[in-house]
Length: 486
Ligand code: NAD
Image (cartoon, rainbow, N blue to C red):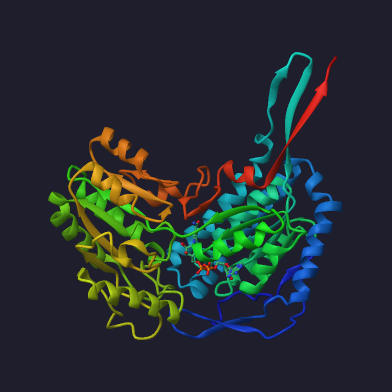
């Protein structure tokens, strides 16, 4: 373990304390070096049931759901401050465990603190309606906490995903069972330690490291009222099925295969600059990665040239180096999956414009060169499937209608962007593309990641919205109260 890593408790956090390990610890590898950085013991089946009971008891009998929302807000504010106070430790964990370049990891930690600050002041602005149903009747609605919620996060944004789920759930008064990805649990375990020091009653936040088996138990368990899952569409489907047996409220943030539509009147240089951030941020391991570039025919040559030049400016290397902009992929298995998609694209006739292999100067770790393909037809798997790596494709189009059709030719509907100086056209296209989020002529990552704005997808990209006031709708039930005034 590198000396600078913070000391952590590497077991489940249940009912206000880290438990004694029960089972075999699993080693975590640094994706940049292949070295073991820590070993975490997954929660045992018995510990998972203990956690569910603790959360149920804390919700049914404890103070948290009944506490004045302003007081709960003050505790959320303390958590935001706690994250800020431990920001270097958290950023280092994201960097060493997830392979994230340290500069981006610091931004993510600041983002996680901002999420808790936002929800600290949100719940006293989220309330019911008064509804004029009849003259002699007073009818109003109350927002009540949903109850015990299971929250399952992926490996690509471990701390942010945990913050996006925990902060609104806590603000609403829920009790949480949070299961991080077995690949990147470290920052979530430190978050549990921070939360424990901020006055959240025991049993309200429980963190259960481990894999699919725990997720399955949470999705099925009758004492859990709702489940918020972020991960792949395939697993989202099985979570939804498992949750159906007990009619849990379900929120799903799933995969994406997002299009960036560039018309020939766009600022091509700006579009290419922004495209690189949008497609290659987090080494392309992002549900929001805009990896399908649809480019109007007359702009294909200048856009391709600008894009390839921008790719050349990305700096691969140690995630600990503040100058690094492209880190490694999460695991050797994932490296092989990405490489397989690249080989398949080559064999299917797409034109390799850049990258397509491991960098010559980085032999250890899971590094992959930023890769671009031209001439990619919508029928190819590269166009349809989420590669989840630093790989993008360029597909030419002629007309506005064709651009819309090609953008919508996807099972997914998460994110996207449109580039045109004709604002009428840009907005027409933005309205016609079936995605939960879309950016017009801007830095798409900035516009889609604001804590104030809802985040989520159409189609097989998910159900429900995270962030903004929308997240509070998921973590609350709406009760209608009717009073006879006669
Ligand atoms: P994954 O679906 O393999 O795993 C996600 C989580 O689900 C992990 O914690 C995993 O342990 C757990 N899990 C696995 N099998 C389960 C089961 N049967 N029941 C319950 N839980 C189970 O996804 P991943 O590889 O960790 O993450 C990458 C995926 O996440 C990509 O598809 C990406 O697009 C998606 N993602 C979506 C968003 C979004 O907001 N839409 C954000 C980040 C990642």
